[in-house]
Image 1 (tube, rainbow, N blue to C red):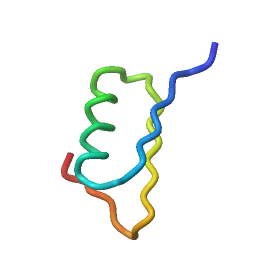
Image 2 (cartoon, rainbow, N blue to C red):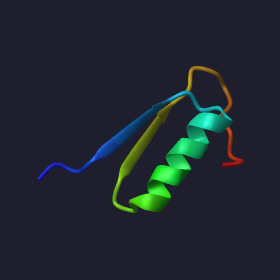
Image 3 (cartoon, one colour):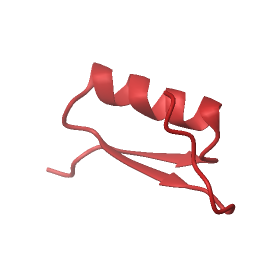
Image 4 (cartoon, rainbow, N blue to C red):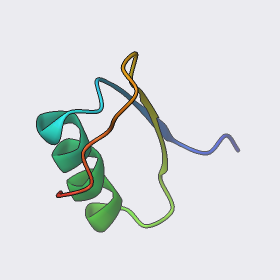
Length: 44
């Protein structure tokens, strides 16, 4: 059975907040974030 995966486009505060919330709701979820700039938000 395939594992569920969430792909987040944008590593700003909104993207990382969504990724963190999804991971809290489903610990087994694979979360992948793409950010084109040199920095991502770690405040989520």
